[in-house]
Amino acid sequence: LCFLMAPSLGAWRDVEELPDFSHMASMSCQERARHSVCALQDVASSMSLPAWMSRMNAACFAASLDFEDVCAMANQHPFGPLVAEASQQIHQETAMVVLAGAMDFGSSWRDELRSFHGKGAWPTVKQGVESLSSLCPDLNAEWLYSLSHKAMAMHLGLENAEHLEPFVHKLHQVVHEIGENLIKKHAKSMADHLMSFLDEVRGDKHAASKLIQELAETFPMAFQDTAYLKRLPIYFYKKAQAVVCELYERFHLLDDRFDFADIDLLTGNVDPLVIAVLRKHQVVRTTWDLARSLDANTDLTTGGAAEVSLRAAATAALEDMAWLGRMKGFPVTPVMLGNYLWGCFGKSEAYASAQRHLNRDTTFY
Image (cartoon, rainbow, N blue to C red; front, side, top):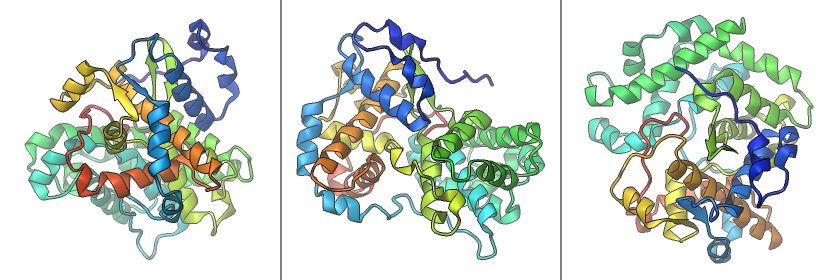
């Protein structure tokens, strides 16, 4: 497999409607993601993008929200938390959280997974992560590298599921790359590598951003979530940011290495369900052609204009809506808002028919 390096920033200078975005080179990962997706909305029309954000509809939807409720739900894990073994130490639990983040994709396989064993993508992945971590709590590099495809299917509970082989194959590739790249860095295990890096950035005011960057560069198949859209670089880092957020929530009161000073700069965790909720409220708008494709359950291309513009529009919308919440005096963040839309709106019966976009090829959601 061949992965592109993170996109360069120079292309933004060629867009007449935008200022010189070369200053993005010195931004943190979170700020780079925020600036690129929000700036894209300003040129969506001139670029004839298939999806964009309506700021007016975002404001109207935000006005209908109970931001006190959003803030009250902030500490509730929307996806069902990982369960650590009682004997696990912080360094081992940290490794488990990062492995879970790396393997957390496959939402487009949810129907096939439920038909096979009654579980969606995240419960399936969660089972696999907890099984792997219980066997090797430190997540030894050589062990991850040598793990077979058959063993991966067994840990996931997907033996004899031939129609799910592509999903298992992607997960196996991600875990294999993690082991391979840890070996290249001369790291004995995932736990050793992560704690060594956290020691290096301890007390750094950009610690969260540096950890996001480290995850993206070391494990690109899982975390290098960037794309080009008509030569313009767009940054998401969705899963890497979610991992950093999870580590902060679990450990910042127990160990100051996890008390990231820049944690509030994270952008929202946007997946197909959050996008579907925002589409239902006309916050994320699409062309008729894209709407028909989504309604027909057509798989979108990873890095294609439809996929990237949908994700960018939703991420930008959460920024606008969170800002409106703060203007009302509530300490709401895009992360809180994304989780709230996912758990309180997306999982309610009223949104059961909201059409999520499909992309069975991606490893980013």
